[in-house]
Length: 408
Ligand code: ATP
Ligand code: MG
Image (cartoon, rainbow, N blue to C red; front, top):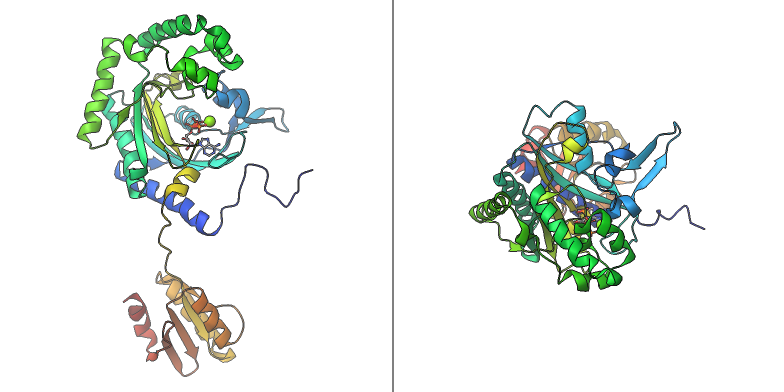
């Protein structure tokens, strides 16, 4: 039996310092992505199930085991979004924006996956992400990665993460690589996990992404995409590396980065930390040139990433606490109305202010000091006093001069 006063397994409340870290991550990402010309979109938290099932790939972990799908009261199958890219591409088409490119999108919000909860892995989790839709040149990939790197720097976690990059090539490279993988794994099929045997037929590249230990041993000897790249795909990848170097983004090449979803081509990358155990990928993405077309729109190339806010928040040092509000305290019942107008004035001037609601002046002062407030404004019929809570020193102030004093 579940307890209705416990949050549902894999979900959590965000309160206090955790909430401060969470929103610090979002605000930092919002500020930095604006510097790169991204604007924020918000798409619905649930979509027609086909938005995800047709794009993420029938053999992806997300579609086979992790989706929160249900039939609503009207009989339609809807799914709580497991990731952000499909919804953004759907919105690009729905809103007729495929002819107004590039579109540079930032988003932040909850995602849902039915997974085994553990540290850094939840059923409702949150992502920040960007999508750059339109440009097909490797400079776009480099800039999207640079924006992610910039955010990690601003959050103070850059020292703890390494950028791993790889290429998945173009269609011709993929086809050649696919054949090589099928040959390699078919010769060793008896040692593959049942899940990877299914992948062998439908999408052998997905085997490289398998977390099964037996599969891992085979994967380390598997052929590499680099041996099968067309000249165009190789030159795209070289372009990416050159631009990353020019933009000052350090990276390591890792042929095992293939990403779990079907829609990627060319660039694949992950920012990985060793500080979070098995949940080491904090930010991950790639290029998806065929996705919009596959959804029923025109061909619109795209590149993007998503990052788990919970994982970033765990790595981030606690953000500085915002200043506590000024306490505005009436010294007698007759002064309450004057105190309330002062409260309104301070807030209108952009100065945080609170009054403590009830109780005598001494109690309210104690509470204000406990909350970390630096100043109290004591209001009496005769006038107002400004009190420094650290040492209890007080001075008479003129109402007109008060704002200036508090700002100083
Ligand atoms: P993993 O290999 O850890 O399952 P993934 O490949 O499924 O990750 P993506 O779909 O690329 O992850 O999502 C991007 C990022 O979102 C991940 O790198 C991670 O930081 C975060 N993330 C993914 N799933 C979860 C989850 N269940 N709980 C918390 N964060 C998650
Ligand atoms: Mg996963």
